[in-house]
Length: 330
Image 1 (cartoon, rainbow, N blue to C red):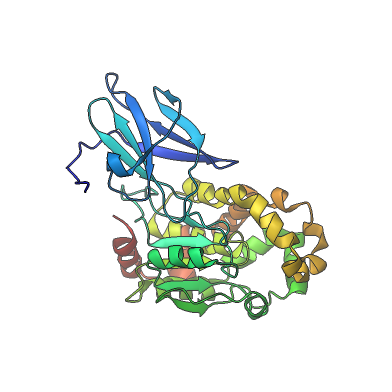
Image 2 (cartoon, rainbow, N blue to C red; image 1 turned 120 degrees about the vertical axis):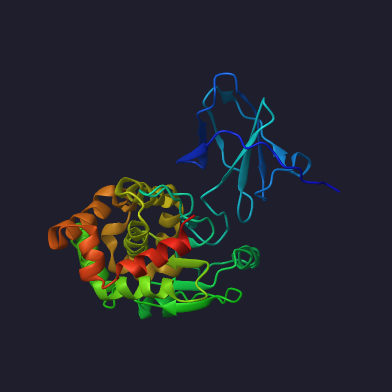
C-alpha cells in the first residue's frame, strides 16, 4: 500500500500546448534547483510508486514531450533535486468521443486569484460518447450541461444522459438551422459580434451559474468553438481573466482541428456539409483569434468597456459578479 507524505512545494510550473499532442512544461527555479524527473499520473497527489516516469529530455527551464493520452484527467509531476515536487493539471481531458474537451481552470485573474479547476468545462457535442467516455464524464461530477445548439442540431445529434447532470438546451442562435448557419459562416466576424451582443442569452447563462448546485458546468455547441467560444469568453471576462488570456483559451481549439474536420466530413454530418460546402477543406483557416477579437471589439464599440457591457447590457450587478468570482475563483 502506498502512503502519501507531505511534499515540499516546488517552483511554479506552466503548460503550453502545441499541435500533435505536444505539451511544454516551463518553470522558473532558483539557480541551484534543477528538475530531475517528470512523472505522469491520474491523481493530483504525487505518489512515485503509482506514477509513471516519463522518458523526456529536461532542459534547465522546461521540457517538451508528447502528452500521455489516458482516459479522463492527467497530471504531470515535476520532481526537483531539492526534494520538492510541482504538479500541473493537463487542461485537455482525453476521451474517444468528445472533441475539444478542456478545463478552464488555472487561469490567473487581474486581482491575483485563479479560476478553479474542475468547475468550468467546455467541449464539442457529446453525441459520440463511448461507455468509457461516459465513465470519464461521470467521474468529473458534472452538475449542469449547457447545450448551446439549436433544436435542429440537438435532434440530429442528441446528447446521452451523464450521471446526475441536468442538461439545459439554451439555443445561443435560435435561428441556427443549416441555411442560417451558412450565412454566418460567410462572415464570422459579423457572426461573433452578433453572438456577444445576444445579451439576453449571455445574461441567462451567467444567472444560471449563480444558482445553487452549479458546482461543475459543461458548455458545448457543435464544435465547441464559436458559440461555446463566445459564451466562455464572457464567463472568463466576468471572472476577471485578462483579454489576452481569454483569446489564448479560444485559440486552443486549433489543437482539435483534425478531430473537428473528421466529424464535419463524416457521413453522419452530411446534413451540415451539404448546407455549408464552403467549410470543406477550410476549417483550419477558421480557427483565428480575429473572430473572438471581433466579439470583444463589439463590446467596446457598443458599451465602451466590459464593465458597462456586464452591468448595462447583461444586467449583472457588481454583487452578482462578486458572487460568481467567489464561487469560481480561488
